[in-house]
Image (cartoon, rainbow, N blue to C red):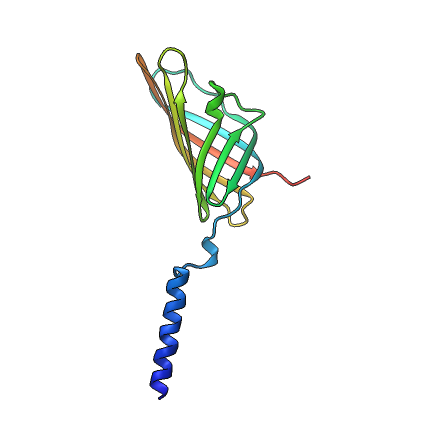
Length: 154
């Protein structure tokens, strides 16, 4: 009889773990919504594009579930302006953000993808990515670094 109880308890625990996906709550997505201070640097890897100086300023993140948008604001220069807007997703303690589109009237296009790790407290994030500009007569690629620090709520 005791063996049947042990089997029943073991089956119940297995069912609970299967229903929960066996994951711990430590991997839940962090809510990144809010204003952040950001520092963005670019290192030219390939191509004849002019150097891009480091930029710093305000970054606004809006998150719904695991989907997020990231907008570079005051302190950042983006040409075209749409290049300051990213979409992405949060997975546990990391997120990926990307953008891309038409850069100019002469056929140039841009694309950037960044992967960032979020600190355990959720108050900072750091990561790297790749940015490209492709034009019919020119192509450039940069390594991109971004660090974010959450601004204190007013």
